[in-house]
Length: 196
Image 1 (tube, rainbow, N blue to C red):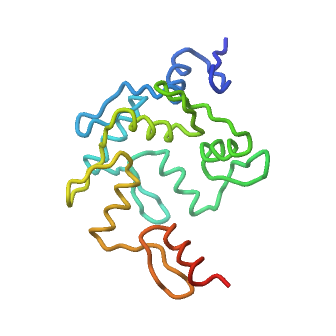
Image 2 (cartoon, one colour):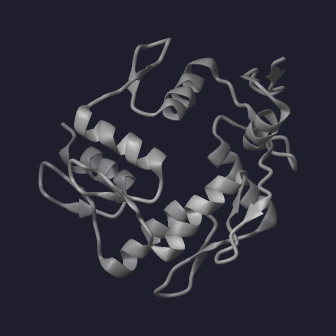
């Protein structure tokens, strides 16, 4: 007997795998990290996450020595060395090293937004988009700057903010070597200064 996800139509061999999968659509995350409070849909994801606090990275790439906390991350990393991109978009043929990236890309063609906010019914193409959006309802800002204590709802916003302290400007103009904190600032610079 097969069990089908009501949101995306994927089939599963049992109710357990189906319920774990459906958490990606509902946003339910019953497993919480004692160290930082971050929540996870699966116990194994919490176990892997715990290594971010201990710094443990027991797995090493044979090619370059880079170390990983999770087998899946090592397996995907190896594709950097092999150039393998085993997943192809059925619409445009664009190839991907990671299956979930291909599935997310395919939604750009279909317009599918299977992840729905239970508070306001807004829909998202990606589970991560729904998780970030949910913080707008809770007001939670779990990512804190170690330098100044400022808090952010989104980790990527924290990383950009940290550049204020580090002075990092990773986006460089190839025309004049001016450097920028945000890629959008680089684009605006190119349009204003170098467009013919």
